[in-house]
Length: 340
Image (cartoon, rainbow, N blue to C red; front, side, top):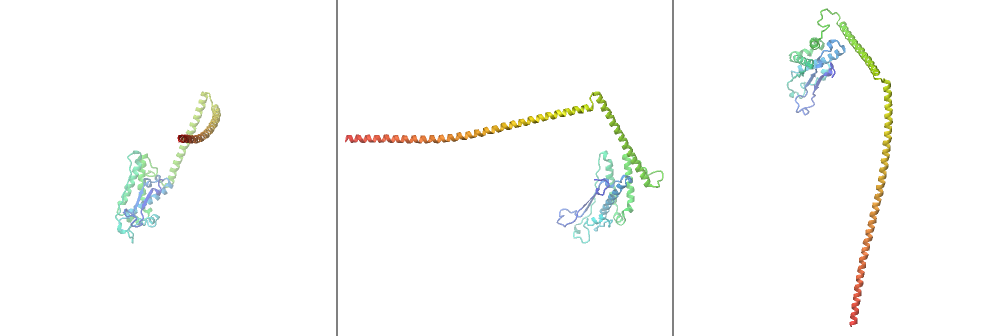
């Protein structure tokens, strides 16, 4: 999330839609706000004017939320800075309003502050910011008169002390972490025009930055020139110049292209040959299948004819037996006649 923007202050609101909606959630219509570390940090000790505006907006949001939480001590919510948009947004963030049917469910307000501190020395500055913010907000909420004090005064009339305290914290961090020496604050000589002194400081920083950029550019150009000279020297030692290497590379590319084209032609020929073999195989398989079907048909006809022949032979045998029996009967009849 961007630094010094009011978006780094997170507000969480629970709007009451009826007792059935929050039957298991007794903290409905409460207010929760979280102030991140960068939201309380002074913007470059007042040097960056654009960032200072965002910082002041974030500070107003944090102070408004702190005043709202501190004023929720009675059965009636007393919102500070009643003409601000934030107050209009948070006017119904708490149950205890006149005529509210859920006032009997309202409990006492609980405030919790959570600070995330790191053990690593690299994040010591961020840990100091979190702890200092927790201490300052805790002192604000712990005081008994914060609700009545912030409810009637404008923000700009009492933010000066807090700005001075935050500037001192920022200077302490700068001295401890970066060995920073202020040019305006705690100066031995009197300064008549602070804005002019700030512009001088900003111009000096920008000029130093421009000199550093030009120095880096010159170093880069010298390094590129040195590398070019080294490349030419290596070409002379190796006996092959860059143009010769490029021509050899182009020849290799052409040779590789010709080989690739020959390989593609062979692949296409192989594919055509395989396709012809596959077609011939399919034709042979279809012809074999037709011959197999014709043989099966002939075998069926042969079996039918054999069965007909066997039937005729059986009938012939029956006829022959009948003829023999008839002859025997005739012979017996003749013998009987002759005997008579």
